Amino acid sequence: MSVQSETITPQAPAADPLVADEALRPAFFDWLCRMGDNTVVLGHRISEWCGHGPVLEEDIALANTALDLIGHTQMWLGLAGEVEGRGRSADDLAFLRDAYRFRNAKLVELPNGDMAVTLMREFLFDAWHFEMLTALTRSASARVAEIAAKALKEVSYHLERSSDLVVRLGDGSAESHARMQEALDRLWSYAGELFTADATDDAMAAAGIAPSLADLLAQWQRTVDEVLEEATLRKPEGRFDVHQGGKQGRHTEHLGYILAEMQFLQRAYPGASW
Amino acid sequence: MYAQMVKSEGMKARDEMSPEELAFQERIDRGEKIEPKEWMPEGYRKTLVRQIGQHAHSEIVGQLPEGNWITRAPTLERKAILLAKVQDEAGHGLYLYSAAETLGVSRDDLVEKLHSGAMKYSSIFNYPTLNWADMGAVGWLVDGAAIMNQVPLQRTSYGPYSRAMIRICKEESFHQRQGYSIMMKMAQGTPEQKEMAQDALNRFWGPALMMFGPSDKDSVHSAQSMAWKIKINTNDELRQKFVDETVPQAEYLGLTIPDPTLKWDDERGHYDFAQPDWDEFFEVLKGNGPCNEERLGARRRAWDEGAWFREGLVAYAEKSAARRAAAGVAAE
Image (cartoon, rainbow over all chains, first blue to last red; front, side):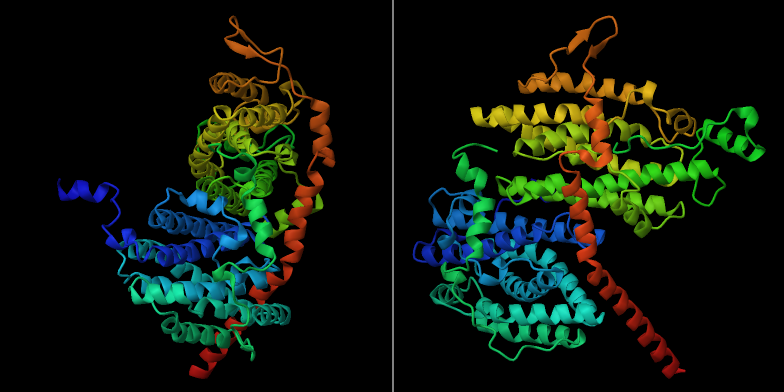
């Protein structure tokens, strides 16, 4: 095959023995669900804004962000299904698991509130997501590295946009400042779950598939400190890791309603093709 | 499409035209494009603002009936496609508001007129989307009807409008195809899915025919707009073309057009079909459609609740400008 035709043919996924590693399977599957569940649930929340944004440019940006996150979900949950090896597709995992099987952090399932809450949540998440994906581009799993590289391009932009808006609204009018501060105060205690490692995270770090979460924290804090300072916002004094459990399937009451809505058609018409 | 009953300023005979107006009309007749800084009759400018504004508003309000199903889309791929489509619609709104701005109106002013009811959006978006097949029907029929009007408008006389239409048409034809693909899946799916597909067609057929506006004999503003090439075909021509193209597509899907009088007329070379319920159409325009309150209410609420957001950005821009100015003074 010529070089030229190779570049235009969609590439087969990279060879990756870790995908079939039986010893790693439960932790690897669990961890991939965490990645995909974070993106599908946050994508769902952001998509609720469609047509209801404060200005046309925001309608476009919000839809675009949700679209990116749904695209990431297809990749993460697709790989999760392969690793699990029971023939489940990304759609099966997204639409046919109940809330206690979802592995997203609680932060992403919280209701949208106003644009201040939506944007502050995006910012806290994006800053984590960016560090996570950057580290994952060096994953021992070639498949994970491949997905991370694709997603990172979009998430770099998400972080740039949410940082910029946090700064502009934080340092904007008295009202926008107050709303951004209130949003930060409300969300702060949920952010730490993204950095709290359990046995799954430890197993992934030991296998070189994912970074140690503690290693991501310093850079996340630097980004958050810098942006909050420029935004003239005060970092809350309380603990940032009060609300835990989403990653282990113990969620807020909100997730059940998200899934009731998201999964309605698949649940009401089992086996139909759409 | 999305422009219905756009009021046009009084038609003048050639011998009543001023030399400027005559020269302008001759440029249009030669197929020249009119550009923003060039002289134009006030009536031409006003009619275009109404038409482009109505079209832009339709794109914006049009996000809502489809947005209604994004969180319930049945697969990740369908969700992604629907998000992309709604995002395109917001983008079309943006091009069109920009085209209108070249005529000396601001986007905020147009939006304010939408919210006050002084400007309209297409009647079609006042109908509810009740089952998933509606996402197919909206793409297939609503975007299909829109394309009938927008394709000829690529040749409209006003340059910025024509260029916006060229971009929009590329995306709309993709939207129509994805709508048809949903209808195919539904029509070939389980008995319940087929039932949903037929139900969607039953509900959207009449409102889709109304999108072209009233019959030519009742369409008082067409002649001047056509002379100015702001409107290229008559309402009835486009409606007939739409029916002629759509009937075989419905047959292919195995769905029944909800019109017992529908039949092919060999002599005319067209389908004969029943007119939609025009009384209903005028009620919808008056604000009495099934979703007028929800649609306009949602847009007003989004605007009002977003006021702090827009004001915050303005405040930041002003502070930054002041800081830059102060830094500039300090540097001198």
